[in-house]
Length: 441
Image (cartoon, rainbow, N blue to C red):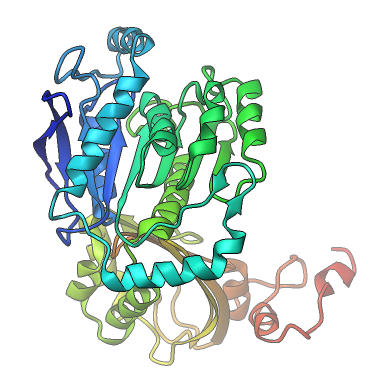
């Protein structure tokens, strides 16, 4: 996905540029993405493209334009020192004005969705019903936002700007602050907060020590529209890909929490349950590899965890489905749904899969010749989406239970079980603790 640069006009008649990235559908709610101390560099532009793929119209303003337009820094030692020195003299009051100008520019664009008459009526009705409950303990009255709108996300220097914008500017539906520095010094401004706010704090941040983190946590402990998360054992920059500070688990969870807040306040809505059903239909019934790949991002990940089968990247995922999955399943395979949990950007499905091991199943029992034994297997699928495209599919199951059921593993000297595992999921009244109660091995 390639963006473009646009000009942002200030109330004083000046102009600065911003990188603009559009969603695949061409329209969506607006997001201002405030950069780190390193400027609106390639990392920030790539991040803007990611949020655009989630369904947003994203603008990354050049927040250093007053110092020198187009300043961008790398993550080398020399560039880090220059960026840090520049951030120390940064005027956050003027920065908030630049965010306001960028928000105004987004709202004026035809690509940014506007509220409809129907959504306004629905919102007014909901507000009347809940008017007696709309007082937030920590931040005052909660202003309900409509579908569409604009929000602010920021990292490092931009993390503080996102917080200040949420407190000072009208019409900010949601704000997310990633390792913003100095929030503990401006907590009193939270009394003016009206939208939703998400704060991400790395535990090992040397610029936001534990005491400061505790102040922030305490300030919003009872708030219903502010979420504060501390990420253990990670440092600032944990969402900065391609650097030593990057931590994929922390970055993934922080992104999911941000997406949940954004979608709650302004959309867009994608029916993940319907998308997942379509994937299963294309892969297991229609056996249509083109349709399967059409529903995925350009760089998908498929990982069947117990056997490490699947692939990373479009070419390898396609090869896996074409050569090892589609058309390679037992003819009597059946899935019984146990539960399905649908979040903002992720779906979790719990099933019991039953089949006769009548063919080689590369992804489940790679290299194992058919035994013609009947198997019932509990399985969990965790399916992550970016917008309406599948980003990552990971499945989990008890491989020992499968091996027991096909006769490749004995239960008498191992703490494992066979078909009983699946049967107890379906019938919770079946006995528990049988392995505990047996004679010690």
